[in-house]
Length: 395
Image: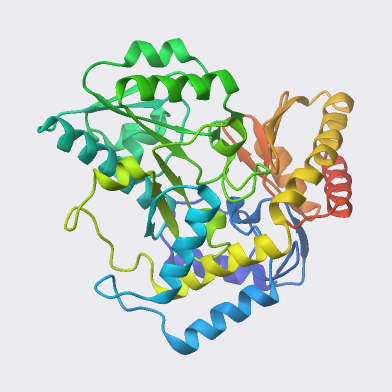
């Protein structure tokens, strides 16, 4: 089989930092992926919540082909129109003030942390401020992002990391308040915790944190890298709560396949934080990736993608709840929109993931015991039914 030889060649050349599944994917169409030996897979992983439009969308592909014929890179020493257009659409969807494009979600976190620190520095005239993050959070693997990631096994091999970080318990407002001092400059958290096990913020919690930040002039950073861009049934999950962050990070589905992220600032932070020379990136905001971002927003609007997620979520939740009722190995369901988790009990979650793969279904895990479903946002009821059928066969 071609799969075996391709995997052997990859293992010879690529640094082994991932325990990859034994499949070599070659192409995609709609919500299906195909391997080099012709195997077909229903995709409920979407490249870890990236491929919102599924695969081989003609409009999306054409936008990238057209941009390749024009320009792919100029650096941030010059303006380019795709970046301007993409930025305008990000701000329209978020209602915020300024955007900075990065190459990844991790880099978006780094920029957000720097903006918050610079805001506090300019306000107080000195450095030395602290950040509150959440236990069981995940924000990325660079040193800064790891420093605010509340899972010890990610951090420990690389310590000492960035100092001045405290951890509170997610969905526990008293725990957050207990960590606040006059040195606190920012609170960072995911609107829906992803890697930690698919935990949405309680309304009282996120509103309470927003009020706390308003009271003490603390910067609220909401990480929407996984839960943003329509996955919750809103462009950004915080919009359902009636709050707005001071800084938002996003990535993944923002480009729906090309490597791009962004941090977005409200007017207060945009006017009083980063200045020329404070932050930069060679590739960030280049014409190629921004042409993708711009077209993603166009397709979202034309095809009513966010509304589609909202309309189909009750059906997906109903089907998953029925699985929880039927099978003892599922203890609970939790999530928002097309970001759902099933708590697996009595067997390793990896066993379920591997059995699903063998049955032509791509799903992934989150935390120690959660089966994570983050499909393309263009799935229909028939794909949900097929997912349930393949998952039941796997069990």
